Image (cartoon, rainbow, N blue to C red; front, top):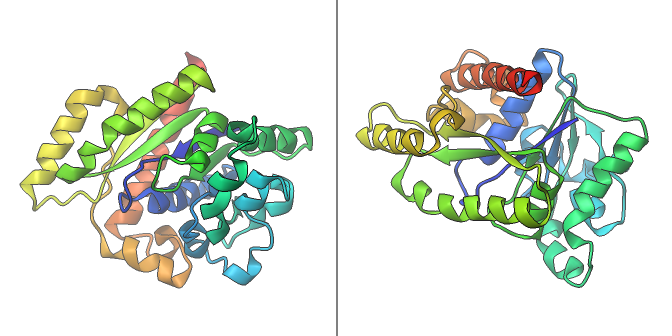
Length: 261
């Protein structure tokens, strides 16, 4: 089970879109995928067609000890893709876990319990909230790696150093195996010189960590969640869907190279 936290404390950079569509693309080639919705907005759950009434157990219940991962997992419309839904209660996790000495290890323990129970996945994608909260720290502590969606706009670069500091902090204090799996450039607009400038700066800083695949700004990616579908099912021929299919191929190649190293 390879656990990847999709994280960036800045909102609106494509974390949920990436978790949904990357997960769908991986599932389409036979990977067993679990998307863990850890955002209080529950957008990943909505985007995968799971209505609030169907979210009987959520990632909130897992984090506060009121349910197990196995109890919270539900199937989606996508074959090979399961979901642990999220809901608004996640906003209260910080307060509830404040005095718990194991507050940062709730998700890690949940995954260990899931594996002991004989349930396994090839890839787990954790859709993190747009903040460096207790939920995000839990995700990074449980994860093998962090995937960073980065919007191709100037302000998106400002919060990146803070995210990297958090990754270093978690690696030092909680999870020495944590690594940056990669940086995905999102909302790329080829008509805008700033997109090229930001992409160039990110590539000069992160080098090979930046995926060659770039996710374009695409209206179909924005429309699809309102239909409860990943864009890859909503319109698999649109530029956004094609980009996420290519991203999945690139991710699998990276994972093969990592395993062989």
